[in-house]
Image (cartoon, rainbow, N blue to C red; front, side):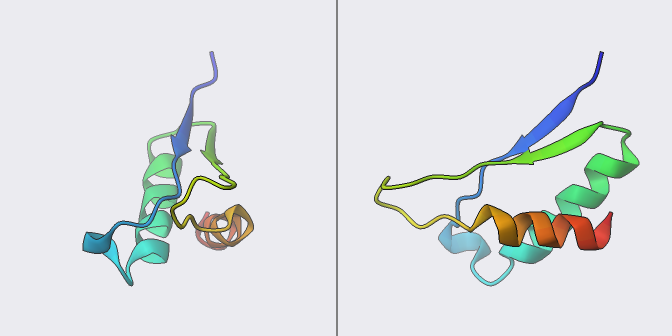
Length: 64
């Protein structure tokens, strides 16, 4: 069985300015724990800001 982790890319006020660092930390943890993948989400027209998944994937690729 292959197990993956999904990260929902929503910014919240308490992590403002730390979003990319938190994604990088999650990516490192997922890799260290031996999961097979880390998925990111995308969202259109939901009325709230979300991080571009290409940016998130770039951060993930940089640290793994």
